[in-house]
Image 1 (tube, rainbow, N blue to C red):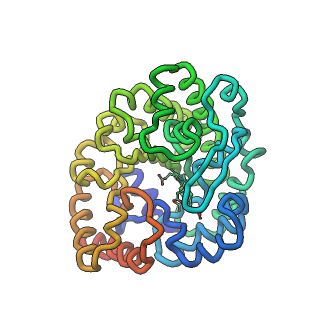
Image 2 (cartoon, rainbow, N blue to C red):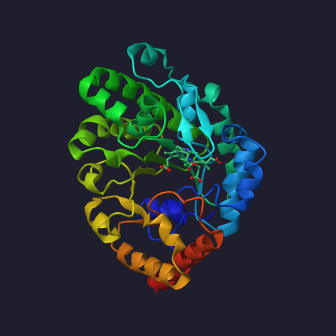
Length: 343
Ligand code: CP3
């Protein structure tokens, strides 16, 4: 078992810097496309054998040091009773957004084993196959709430923020339910065999820091506290566009903070408090010519020597247009340069 990822999460020394990429399974891979062409995205998410297959693809092809469960952050929102649709090229849609008390009351807090058995089955099957650690995940409550309140993706989060400011008790009621759902979902993933857990707060950076502190952070704290009572596996919190929030996130009881590319890695490490750090190559830097990509990776590894623990990753997900050969170059560069760096 290659434990470099888990060791780095805990700030232990490793033989090389571990690397995995957010969205490492997905449309940039021809092997993923071949599987995905036969069924819809949601059908794929509910088919454990195929989820195992697409989770393993990037591990086998590129030699990543960790696998991330193939699923989606919105699966538990469907299990809460909301209709969910994915249309190619348009992202996720909730045809009936949650904006009044009646709809909030109707939301169920699902039983993960009953309502999302395919996710837990995927985890169990993966643990039999994998020689690298398996990361489970969920969306953070604020990010999930934006999707269900807006009815899908959004640019300025008008519906979410106006509910937050004008009907805070409604907003709090939704967030409380999503938080309860997320805690029990992640605890179930850990019980099924996930070896680390990541919370994705993809839209946290849309909030002013004072609003993040009131309307997003407390729910993340609740989940982390719930998880600490049930499991001792490493916990990762990733706030996309979160450099302005580090003052708040540096105090979280997570083992690792995920960092996006809008802040120099060295600055993020200085501000990350006691945490290990994960990130933060711009996903579009994978389009650089080989020599420049390698030079950028070498510079990041140099800066990362100051970190309490360091996991190489992108600052957000791989984009579908990415050339898989460039991913291979990046993973090999991280491994090669970090081994040299330790001598
Ligand atoms: O490899 C992995 O990272 C594991 C699988 C994974 C997916 N989604 C698969 C996916 C993970 C960890 C996610 C998380 C996710 N999903 C997030 C948080 C991370 C982030 O990117 O900010 C968010 C916000 C979502 C919601 C979501 N799912 C969106 C906005 C979209 C559409 C946009 C897009 O990229 O197509 C999805 C669909 C989705 N999730 C795909 C995949 C592989 C593409 C679906 C397809 O095959 O058509």
